[in-house]
Amino acid sequence: MSISVDEMPTPPSASERTPLRAVVPIDVLRPVRITLMFAYLAIYLWWLRFRGLPIDRISVAISVGIFLVCAFVGRSWRTWGVLLLDSMGYCVMWLAYERTRGAADEGISFFGLFRVKFPLQVESMRNIDRVLSFGYDPNVVLQHHFFHRGVVRWYDVVASTTYMTHFVVPIVVMAALWAVSHRQWARYMKRFATLLGAGCLLFVVLPTAPPWMVSKNYHLIGSIQRPINYLGFYHLGFKGFTNDYKVQLSNGNAVAAMPSLHASFALIVPLFFLPWIRPKWLKAIVLTFPLIMLTSLVYFGEHWIIDGLAGWALTFASFWFWGRMEQRTRRNRAGRARAVLEPVEPVLT
Image (cartoon, rainbow, N blue to C red; front, side, top):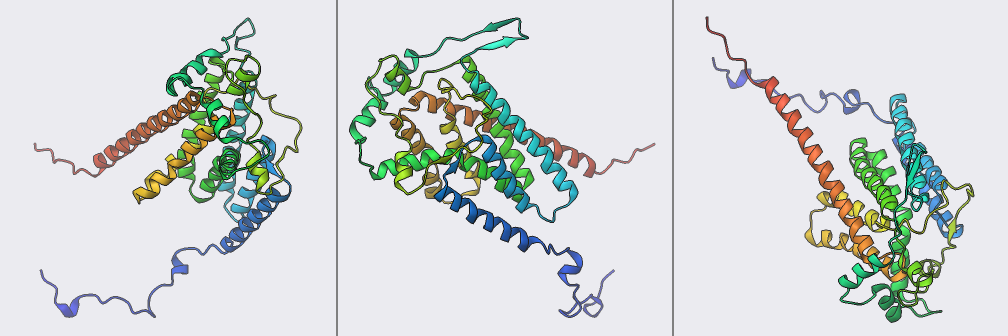
């Protein structure tokens, strides 16, 4: 059977086409959300400039919560319900982290019956760093060559600013991904939470004295000036930090240093977005950020080199594990889809 040219259907004219808004609902509140988010960003930057960087967990959680409220104006109740559940998981994750970090030097309690306490690593990390640095103490060498009391150099500004991104960038990425794509947010959070959990376990099993403590309390390396991580930040005109909520989730712990989560978080964000970056030169530039962070941590005397390398190793392991899990899930779904679409062979009798 053939169809002549005259019988073929003609496409509708422009006047006869169905308007897009009749098929796809128009989100009338989208401009409102965008306006609110930009207004909130402006207020946050003003606060950062004149009041200081919020660093306590409660202030950070409130900051993220306000942003998400702006980003979800007009969304469905189901979306708000999912956001509430995700927020509860977010709070539980950080509460577990703070509690574990605060008890890093107390060991593990088994149902209150007995406690296993792990030895504090003092000389071991110093010795590993000396092997990595050909017999030198990298923290002492960097400060000896580059730190000048009373003078803030350009590299102090770079190092200090890079250090402070630890308190902002990973959380901003969480909030932005939630607002844009819940699927990508879930992928990011699986990797982030796994990294955080592994880090908490190592805090307890491997309590480690940081370089400044080894210098000040044990005198096993040369003199280290501390704290100097804020100097470049202040030099830019920022007022410092805000810690409005004095009730802390933990007392903090100086020996929760292995692995370095500063180094880990500096890698997890570039690594997550790397597949979307096409130019190789831009990928190379992005991957210099973790290197700058680790160099800054060593320069400030906050971490050993091995702390940062361990943090990077955990980050790569988290990405490898969840990459394999997601690949397996895709294969299983593709297999089920092929099984449904395959034609059924007729049964001959």
